[in-house]
Length: 190
Image (spheres, one colour):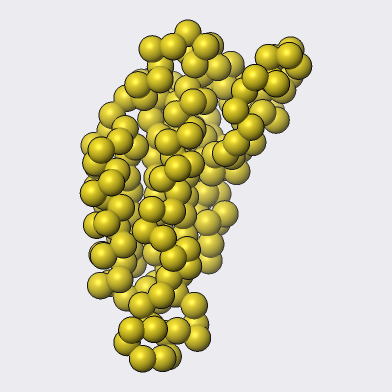
C-alpha cells in the first residue's frame, strides 16, 4: 500500500479515516470517546469511564462486525539535526521508539476489537534510523494484542498479527463497545 507524504499525525489520521469511509466503513478521525457517546449514557455512567486517550482513527467494519481504533505517532527528524554530524542526525521526535504503545493498550478498555498503532516516518528520516525504531517497537508489540503498522517513505507494512482484544470478555467492555458502535454509526449518517 502506498501512502502520500504527510506533514503530521493529524493529517495521517484524517487520511486514514477518509480511506475507511470511501471503502464503506463508518470512520472518524481525532475521536474523544466521551464526547462521541455523551448522549447515549447517563452522566453517572460517564463518570466511571476512562477519561483518555483520544483515538486518532475509529472505524467500524460492518461486514466483519469489527470495531477498530488507531493510534498514530508521526516521527520526524528536526531540520537542524539533519545537517549536523552523523550521530546528531539520528535524532527523532518523538524520541522514544515506544511512543504510542501505552495509548494503543489503553484504548482496549474502550471495547475495540482491534487496537492499531501506526508509526509513520517523515520522508526526511533516514532508513537506518526508521528501521531501528520500528524493529525495537515490533519486539515489544509482539507481546501485546496491538496490530503494528509502519509507514516509511510511503510504503506501509504490518509488523504484527491481528489479535482480538482480550478485554472483550468483560460485560461492561462489551456494553461500551456496543454504545461506541451505535454512536459512530449515528455520527456517520449525519
